[in-house]
Length: 111
Image (tube, rainbow, N blue to C red; front, top):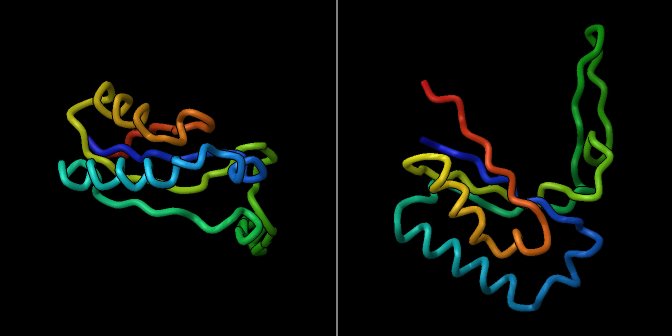
């Protein structure tokens, strides 16, 4: 089964993340790539570069930044393929950002 891991953190405090986090994240990615579990992933540009798109009554409405007001933003993603949710959770719990942010695990609709 495939799962999307949404890597979320507060951009304003990301600079204060432990210094080893970037190197640990690279190691995490390389490990999953070598195992064939990670299918795709990347970092996202800062939330200030985001554009929201909504259509209301036939009109396209654009907005700057994320739609939701929240302290944490999605800073990256990984698409993984696992046997089950337990394995996906175990993989997500090993992501370095999980120690100071959030990793949301969401199954993809298969079929």
